Length: 77
Image (cartoon, helix red, strand yellow):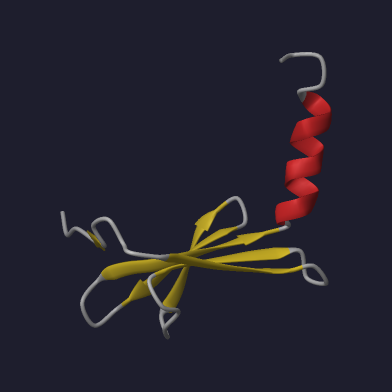
């Protein structure tokens, strides 16, 4: 099985939240061009296809999901 590379202990994690689209973008290191691969449940893995390295994640409906789960977990903490 072919493996993807993970950046070991990245010096910085960059993120940006787009409230209009309710999308959270997470980049390992500086943001860069990458191929988006839908890994299910509204999560997109961003991969530098030249060296098969995961460089970030995109999470769709981030705020809506978080609020929904917070509501389900009320009283369970």
